[in-house]
Length: 163
View: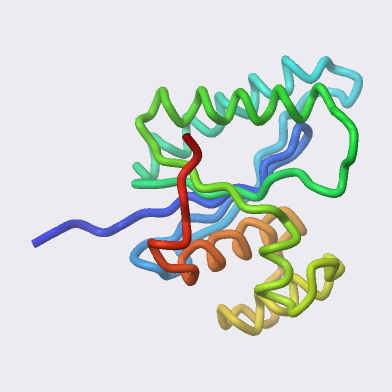
């Protein structure tokens, strides 16, 4: 008999990150990781704090894989987001986790019907799809739930882990 498959989904951000845990395709819990430090604090310190808190999630849930949405809509280099992406890659290697990343547009297209769906439209689509109508969650949690659902419904052949 095999154990449960645990998926950790992230809406990773430099200041605040949403997360969702799925077990065998079902939502278990969600939450938000805040850095607990001032906005003026350097991105490197904020990202380091985020990674420390992600370590705690891995200890608690022991995920088999991780999925997250990529920052999008920005057409120029943003050092803090590059640092975040690099740190997530290092973090996943440290824990031996396969990471699947998707653009926000492809997740929103799948969940809400169009790539530029608003936060409220995405939240409602996730609520309806996952049977979570009436539950109070942050935007980051809805985003994490959306990327998890997208990942789980894409099929193994379609989801390519980064190299």
